[in-house]
Length: 317
Image (cartoon, rainbow, N blue to C red; front, side):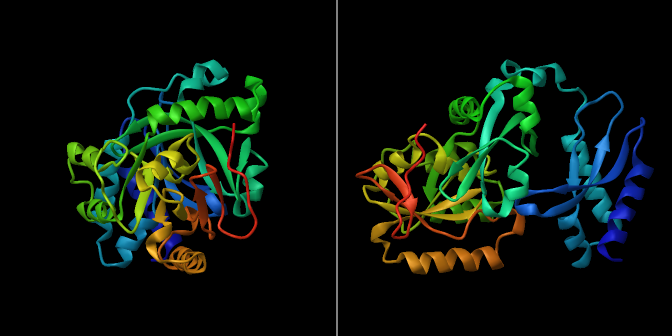
């Protein structure tokens, strides 16, 4: 079966298994960089939080030979992990004060999201844009979030600067930055989440007072979800510079993390630009691409700029 037939079949099978009035319906969302993703939106009577399970990866499993019945079992098992038995208090989103302590931000590519940016409050950050969302819930299986739109800030009577002030404070508490070696990043990826929390904390160089050296490092948040935003956290790049004791390049490897390369590594800007573009084309999903250009952080000035001859000021708020 093709992808459309697959999604229709998943919707039908899930509805046959659902009980208590729970219904699954196909839902197509426009994600980052204008990419569309199709999933099943699962609605429960009396519950105002409806999880969506996207189906592209499951279809890839099906094409690779996994039986359709096993895939439905996997989807249902995942649903049981993320299902909610209580509604979120919608009264909170009616006022800025109700959500102020849950507002955070992420970075997206400005040029690739021009239509989207017309609908949401945002701030410029080099050739990227800071956009805001309310992090409603964080669980091991994922997050529940609400994008902040222009209609929200009109209702709340706030400006983007006020969103930034709240988000810049909240991310340090809700989505703290983590800085670790590329060597550790590969171990974490291969472990598929099996590393214990104590080991994770020990590998975070922001928490260690040891002289660790590597050719490349990774900067992200503790969820590894839209962690590239850490490059815009107040004082984080300054902290990286204090650890490395060198100017460094910032490579936008995806919306979820950035790669840090000390300037003494032997790679030049042109080589790194080419590497980022190649990885974006071959290794990164379209909706997770952040940018194609390398940035340079200068410790002496505290300025982050595009690694070209044209200087761009860092974000100061």
